[in-house]
Image (cartoon, rainbow, N blue to C red; front, side):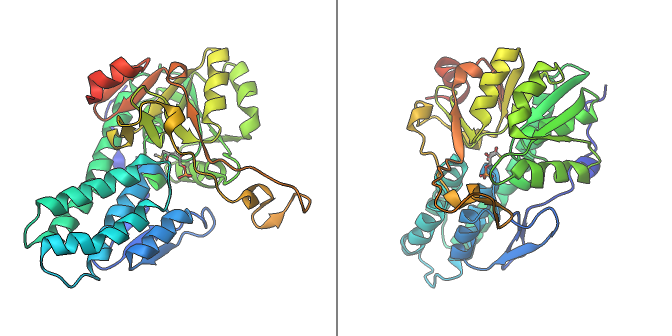
Length: 352
Ligand code: MRU
């Protein structure tokens, strides 16, 4: 079994491209049938793209926001760094407000603010360097997590994933999907199942398409088929990403992750959360303190723009849920693996 991964084969998609004067985002609202980049030339266009899910996935929205700050500098005429910082702040606030649950967004903006605070007269270049660093560090973290997470998976295993955590959701390679790519490349994973991920269908529209680009077969299931699948014994791990991991290991991720973890516990299937340390939020003690984004109930009223529900029906559309840490077998970050996470093991790994 080789630990080497052919990244040219297993890492083909780039959702975020910086051209020097625009940010190009692979428009995830249009996939899989239209592969088209949306060009953003202002930070407000980036904020709107994040809000509208043209770019999505916790690490990807952090990276996009960092480049959004670089775009915001183009509208600042001051050479003085302190003056520039105060003039940039409203744009940073608008980027931060684009989505509430993934901590990577606030984390990336905090890094950009800190880079600005350290900078001198070259503050424009310093911000561009920082955005590039956030991007390249994410790719490196994903490759490292791929190796760490795959090592936990016994050869011959089946895995079930949820939402899209791949190249599309990151700088490249992916978090949970990176582990799955590495596990397939190393011959550990025999079968990959992906849940549709109602209502936005990240699994059906993005994950199985993304794996297909690498030549990895994945079997799509209805979200509601997950317990039935686990009962057949075909999956040994649920492998998912995260939008925010709290100080006690509680993890916010795409709606439906919590019920997968409950079902996994019942069937003796293990749960692996894979996320870069930029998703760890040691300032939030536990999952009940996380703001859960609620989106347009209209997402539940139809599919692909066609109404499927009678007029006048109300709907509730929280798009994330929180999996309590005691349902998680392993949290994998680029810094290492935390088995059976709790407040003590999180503190040991990430400090106070
Ligand atoms: O609403 P989305 O599509 O941005 O939600 C994405 C998820 O929940 C992912 O699982 C998470 O951000 C991790 S992506 C590497």
